[in-house]
Image 1 (cartoon, rainbow, N blue to C red):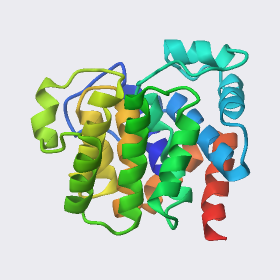
Image 2 (cartoon, rainbow, N blue to C red; image 1 turned 135 degrees about the horizontal axis):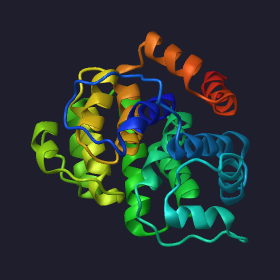
Image 3 (cartoon, helix red, strand yellow; image 1 turned 45 degrees about the vertical axis):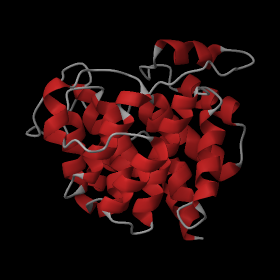
Image 4 (cartoon, rainbow, N blue to C red; image 1 turned 90 degrees about the vertical axis):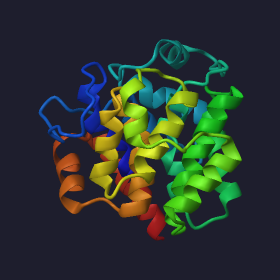
Length: 258
């Protein structure tokens, strides 16, 4: 989960100032948590405390009204009662990492059921559910110690995603988009091709797309594969993560230790 939030923070300044290079300053003053972090915290709250998915997600987002939410999701936040809207936007995948982390020692089916629970309240289109599931599946496999080759094969076979291209293959023609079909496979590739957590985030931002979301998806997969350097995590926690979100982050990791 913290991998998703750090990815969101680092990518936040490049969503509208897109770059095609891995050479950039990792944390800058303008970095901030966006809707990716807010929704990830909401999902953790839902799963830790067995709360209503729709109402809890709405509550968190209403408490952070400047979260730069997508248009249809912003309407959903105000909806009473809330109803799913057949979305296959990449928001399904950027928020779902707590489902994998909390269930990393459980059967994969339990992690995927948790993914569906928190996704279907908004992103009930098959491609939205699939994008979230693929993200959870990749994270879960990383925590099992599966190899990069094994993760790539499992995700490609299970979800039909093309993971054959390298980051360098993807980057030149990649354009900003907000759908799972052309965000999730690319973000997974950024994580699987990385040699460290930081490298995965740099891969994701360098595609020149929806940078915070790409990095929020790649980040928790890289966290499972590589871990997160203490210096990077400390800088994010001390300088960029709001207290309410940080409280849920710490509760999630403490929950896993019990």
